[in-house]
Length: 311
Ligand SMILES: Cc1cc2nc3c(=O)[nH]c(=O)nc-3n(C[C@H](O)[C@H](O)[C@H](O)COP(=O)(O)O)c2cc1C
Figure 1 (cartoon, rainbow, N blue to C red):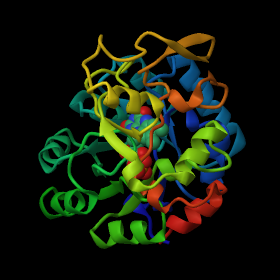
Figure 2: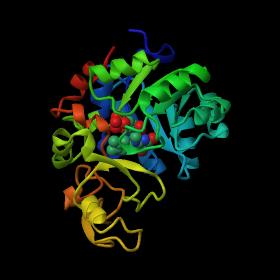
Figure 3: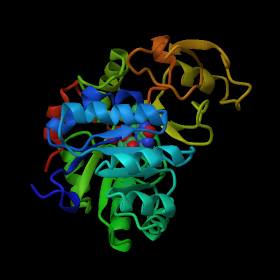
């Protein structure tokens, strides 16, 4: 198999928040794909521990994601010391970080949602781009469909392009490759895996949903304001919509504590999804989901998902 940038992988597990526990990442790596640690919300010491736990289980390349809407300067220092094979940056690009990480031996991929952002990322010296189409689950940088974005980047930027957004089966993966993607990324599809550290209720909801059960909204904004996200239309979303989609401060049930996560209260409209260990009204939490739910018929082992998406 010829992989991206001379590596042996061509399937990547997206950073999927708390759902990307070590069990999932190790299973993805053992299947020959590239796992990603979502590092932004880990304390720097926790990030070091997470990398060590992964490396104690499997000798395989690893990616680590940083969201540049937040202060990640200390995380970058951890990565310079730990030297994961790939660092992915999203919600921005920073030439200083790119240079520092590359000097440490990491390759840096930048997730973008427009062709213009692709050119800006290329100017920082990035090694590759991740095209995130508007179909994607989680926080979404794009309003452009994946195929058009991949083609636009491939035609004009001159860096390898990895495709993310709505990739959930062999056909969607093949379509992204046909558009010119050198590798494919899946997020939502891996949430609905046996090994993901996500509540069963969230996994089942992904299996039961169709594409139109997802919506790109800004409503789950507590914790990360002004960043559109694609989620399932659940009871919280429907009650807000039925109330006429009022602004923050006037939303139904705002301030209600509806769950507990890591010993802390979780209020309605928070950006916290029902990862494993979260208790309370799980259905009412932020249920990140991409349009690819249309194609997710069962919860599968991570290795079976990698096999589905493979060239
Ligand atoms: C539960 C969840 C959490 C996510 N968290 C992050 C994140 O921390 N950083 C990031 O760059 N992207 C994040 N994303 C977006 C992914 O990087 C990727 O673009 C997306 O999952 C691709 O679309 P798909 O879900 O349809 O496969 C997240 C996606 C999901 C579903």
